[in-house]
Image (cartoon, rainbow, N blue to C red; front, side, top):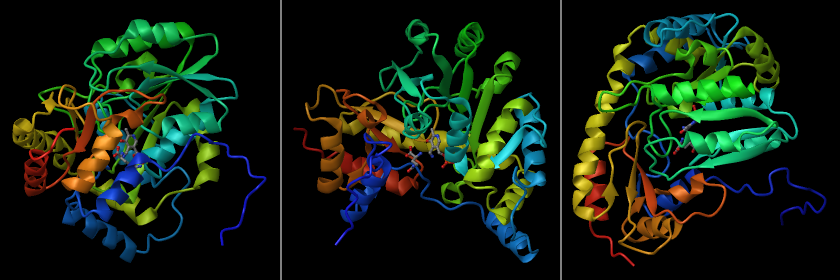
Length: 388
Ligand code: PMP
Ligand code: GLN
């Protein structure tokens, strides 16, 4: 018999189990192809696995420094110097975290005070709003179509008030795939400096970007970098989502506050894996080839989906493809995602779960970080949908 918790008042009454956990469980229960939760079906490089065991055998098995192993912080500095043309001091401005999830949570906790408003673009990744609420903040939404191709900066400026403290950016965006342009960064810079906003930028898909587009980090605009926390992850870049290793970049003054929280949340993160990634970063081809690798998969999957009737606009970045079905069915996206998992054996994510209020968009999100035969098999099954 479970114990009762009669006097326990939830701090997050509106939060349930995440849609990613739910859809993965449903996929498991019905033995469906899981294109729902975003994770690669393929393994990470054997060379990277060998490096983990090398550093374990070298005895790198005790606590890492609180800010992270210095070899890894230095390797990140080198990488962003070369590719983002900006510089962060490895000792003062970089912290290694337990995935981007921790980096985002800590940055939000460091910034948001009770009553502060935070601008959140919808569709939004699910971890931002609970973190804002845990700090007593208030999310203020800029609501966009799930397949938006442009940011409505008019709408953004109308959402800013004297209580606005921060704004959350996600480029490339999960789930829309939208990739921020230089113009977007300049608009953000103007608004952020006019209203003295802090920027929290989620850039976990920085290396998965298509059709010749370039990732423009918030750190590439100096005045923005000075007011930003940039959160990254190695999970997507090296096919290691289960390692939960990420990092945060911010100016030294911001990083002091970030580390005050990080040190009491996890203190430090897994040591031999940090050494392994530090050494692996010496081979840039692993991340430089990632966009081409995923673009081919995106195109293969989209071609195979042509026969299904879904409305497909090729995603600009991330490993997610959205598929519209307005005109084919009146069914809501959650009901359809669940039915497809049960009846045809393909799991997806209903994009309405990236919105705070109920929405009626008819769009499913499919993860294409899968083997080619899995993608082809899923598309073939999706061709057999009986629309209701
Ligand atoms: N941000 C976005 C947009 C994501 O899709 C994810 C999910 N993987 C994360 C953050 C979390 O990254 P990590 O697994 O490194 O915590
Ligand atoms: N980022 C992954 C996605 O969007 C999910 C990660 C998680 O399950 N929390 O599918």
